[in-house]
Image 1 (tube, rainbow, N blue to C red):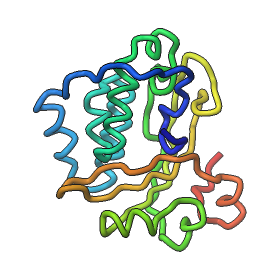
Image 2 (cartoon, helix red, strand yellow; image 1 turned 120 degrees about the vertical axis):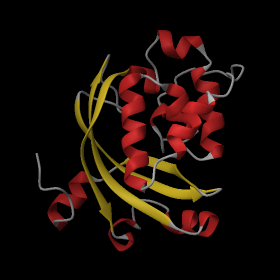
Image 3 (cartoon, rainbow, N blue to C red; image 1 turned 180 degrees about the vertical axis):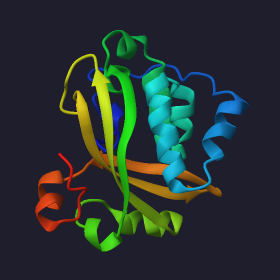
Image 4 (tube, rainbow, N blue to C red; image 1 turned 30 degrees about the horizontal axis):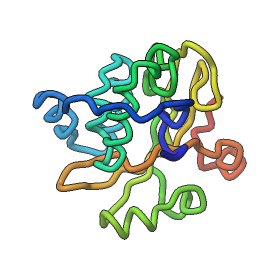
Length: 177
């Protein structure tokens, strides 16, 4: 598991048995996203509602397995690790980025090689959390999110911290506070 998605804050997230797959309806909801932006909105809504089955369905298959193991470990929930640290979430702002603007910060070429096309979004997600960590803090957290097509469905391949301090001076951010 890498720091490319928010469960990376999985101190002692020891291997645990996987949970059963989410309901068919949850899978259909995640797949129903018609635009990459809709998938990101679904991910944020699932975070806000602590609907972890839908949250998992938003990710590429490889990441889904990591999330299932993480979510099935009761210690992670009890200790508010990773995504279990989220009390509420809302999409504050979102912007599709040109590949040339972000290729130094996210492995776009790897996603293009594996999935064909990759869409990169700069997103501000406003969180309320149990405890501030390096992965989540109260207020707007900025991410670069890579959305790819996997088996005909948009899926998130990466969600990494955005280099706000680099984007702002280059004028490629949101120009918000």
